Image 1 (cartoon, rainbow, N blue to C red):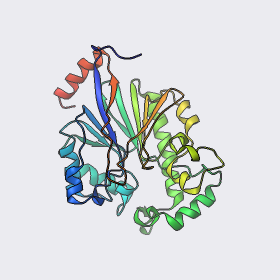
Image 2: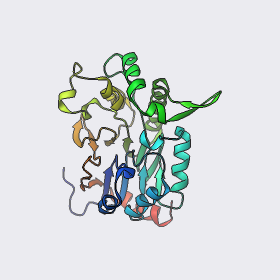
Image 3: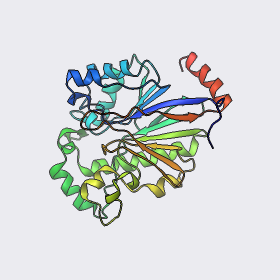
Image 4: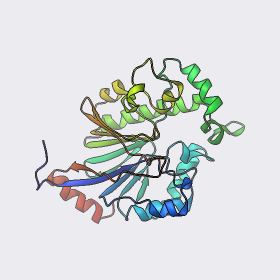
Amino acid sequence: MPASSTTPQLTLFVCSDLHLNLLSPHQLDALTLPAADAYLIAGDTMDGVDPQLCNWVVENTRNQPTFLIPGNHDLHGFTRHGAVTALEKAFSHSRVTVLMDSYAEIAPGLAVYGSDYWTDLKLTHNPEQVSQTLRESWDDFKKIKTESDDGERSITPEDTVAWHRRAKQKLAEFAEGYQGRYILMTHHGAFKEILPLNHRNEHSFNELDAAYTSDGRHFIHSLKNKPLLCVNGHLHIRHQSTENGIRLYANPRLSEGELAQQTLSVTLCDEQQHQRAQHYSTGE
């Protein structure tokens, strides 16, 4: 049912895959984000962590609450933990919150849960072949590092599957305990429905599809507290649909530089609106 004109609304701007380092100075100046009450950035903001590009994010989110997750490209040149630490340092004096298998409240009783999420590589029902293809063609497995007994090494598909497994576990724990509503923001997809129409039949999946998303419908719908909105990045495909009552949404910057300026509205009850004003005025 449409909200009445007096129902409090929270305006969100969601985007992903900005890849700011690929833009010329002129393109970077021309790229804008619309006014919003809060911003959600679903990964691949840049390759690695560039403090100057982090400043661009701070300036263009207008000192509004902003929630950002790393994507695979943000990890390039780092370990996963190292990239998160570097992003947190770069945004330490701003209102940008970096999320990694964690959550923050946009308003009391309304949270965003963020994870890079990776995938289980099972979309084609042949994870071994997917792993082999990715080892040979996916530069994440050369540019992202992880700690080992002998120091740092390049990640493997087995590492990312383990990250995905832990991400699901942490999300289930959050959904078990959090009593409010929440938005699930992942970089890699949680639903196969985000793929292009001609790739949604299981006989059409290829190895790269399995690196972009998992078929996580049953898991997401099994959560004790289900998200009201699932945001993803990574695919570089705009998407908006509803899957069994959960809204799916993606708004990447397209290769020609265009970023859709559409905002989303979330209805707040009067009590949430009052608490939100207190929440932000006290700087929590």
